[in-house]
Structures are given as structure tokens and as C-alpha cells.
Image 1 (tube, rainbow, N blue to C red):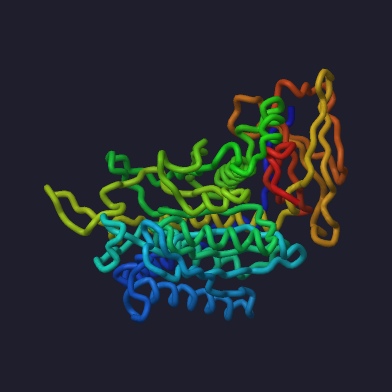
Image 2: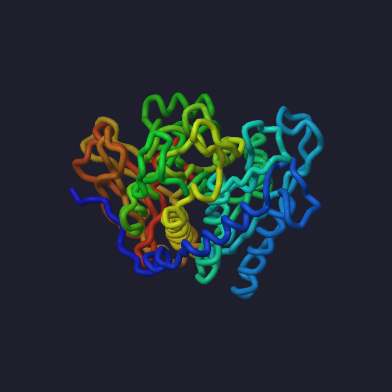
Length: 437
């Protein structure tokens, strides 16, 4: 059988090489310099607190936009939250959004996000110094750096760079953005949430700068009872759009990011914990968490102190800037590849029960929105394999039959392929795997 592989794209290699560890270091130091970025902290000061931090982030996006001739639409997105356990009093939760509109399919979006806010041991302590160097100045710095590099290029689909607030108080920035995206009819095909991408030394003593983790949910929470019954008999538990988004990023890492091996974690997030991809999952958007492999819990959610010779607190000395740049490159190339590629196939269906052959069908993408469409590729794998193993390019058709490939023995999917060889994520048939229209 033919093996599954991406066509090599030299522009994607170039994008990966343009990410700067030096610029990321500068931005992390700037964010740390605001003292605290707690959601409930100071908003009037120009030098301290969440208000100063978000104004600086917006200014950076505005600067990037000015350098690319106004290619970014930059704005604040906010909502007043109150009556919550971690936000008891009325508080404006303000995120910063920058949108790079696509040339032919502007209503199709891929998103990179990071979290602005920081915290210490007491989640309600909004006055103490809370540097948040790794959690999550690293993710914000990576998002800004990706915007700097990708804004130099043109893409078919749109890219969003999101600096989300209120994460530590209850994922509120993500909830606000996801709710607005649904209301506005945004076709979000991927959310890459970056939360802690700069630490290489684990609390267990492991030091490793060559791996990263991709967390993705299995069955999507928006599944209906009828869809669940269908999935029980046809599969899809490990082929949600988020899970196939993780497979896509994993293949990007193998091909374009030197010395990086990503681990696909079959779980929504760390055990019992949460991140800003979850609100997007909650309303049905494909979303994953990208982060370091080796966490240091002495540096997370800790008051700044030294006890028994151990330094606690999320300070700048715990961030490896080259590693943060490596994970930022992974994001930038993944975003670019998906924005270059045609939209993921819609209405993917499969037939083949009690037959020697398997037939897949889908809806042809709009030619005006996807002029780069060269055709489609069918993927399949053994049911116990984590990654797609086999593939076949089938041209610009809406149906294809794999002769003598028995439906019962494999999982199947379909990807859209561009003239330059870039591909969309693979779409598993039926509601379980749908990326939407």
C-alpha cells in the first residue's frame, strides 16, 4: 500500500526558519515586567497590571499590521463578568484579537492563541508579583512572533492571533471568543492553544528540549444522541476533528521542525486540569493544546519564595527561549499549511458494509473560494494505529472506491490537496469527524 506523506513545501521550511528566539525572549521579558497580569489586577497603570499588558500586546499587533500595509485587523474583545467564584465582582475581561484575512476564503479561520493572565498560589491574589514567564508569557510571545512572520505572506484562508484573558479565573476569554465566533458564523477549522511552551526541565528532574505534547479530545461534546448511536456502530471515538487536527500537527512536526517529536495525548487536557482550547471544543470547533512535555510544578501557580533550598515561582530563568521558538515554529508552519490548503472536505460519507471494496464520497469545495484545489487524498490506517498509515491521491472528484480494501479492517478519511501539495487535516466520515462546511 502507498504510505501516507505530505509533499514537501519549501515555503513552509522558510517560515519555520524565520521564527526568532531573540524576539520571543524580548517579548517574554516585557510581559514579565508588568509585575502581575492577574485578571483582577490594575488596569489604569501604564507599567503594571493586566491593563498595561493588554495595551502593549495590542500595540505590538498594530505595529505588525503597519509593517504589512494594514494586513491585520486588530481589536479588543471584551465582556463584563461577575458573580463567578473567581470573578465575584463586575470585571471587564479583555482579550486582544488580530485577524489576517485570507485572499480567497476569508470566512475560514485557523487560530493560534495564548493567555495573557498570570497568578500566584492564591488564585484571588491580584496584587502580589506574578511574573507568569512560562505560564503564559511564553504562549503570548509565541503568538505575537507567529504574527510577525506569517504577516509577510498571503494565504487563501484567514489566520487569527488571539491573546486571551481570564484563563486562570475560568477560561473566560476563550468562552467569550468562542461564543462570538458561533454568533458571527465563523468557520473555524482549527484552534492551536499554546499554554506553557517554554520549560524543558521537569519537576521530576528530566531535561528535554526535543518533545512536545498535543492534547486533543475524543468524542466531541456537541454530539447528539442520534450521532452517538451511529458512532457506536461505525467508529469515530478517536477521530474527532480535534484528534485529526493533532495528527496533522504531529506530521508537520516530523517534516518541518528539526529535532522535535510531538506526543499525541488522547485526553482533552492534563489530568483533571483545563486550558483555553476547551471553550472552543465545547461549542464544536476543532481545538487542541500545544505545550511542553516536562512541567515544573514548582514554577506554576506559586508565590515567589525559597523554601528548603527550592526556588518557587514562574520566573524568567525557567524559560528556554530556543525551545519556545521551536514550538512557535510548529504553530506557524501548521497555521500556514492549513491556510494555504483548501478547506477540509465536507459531508464526508463512507459505504462498504459486506462488500470487498470501500467507497468514500464528499462535497467538492467551492472553486471561487478554493482556486488552489488540485484534488483529494484518501487516507486509511489500521484501527489500532495512532497515525494515518496509507494514502491515495484520487484527483478532483467527489467519490472514489478503494478496490479490495475492506471497510471493517481500517479507519478512513479524506483530505483536500492544493496545487502546491499542502493539505487540509484528514476528515473522518460522518458527524463524528466533521470539520463543518
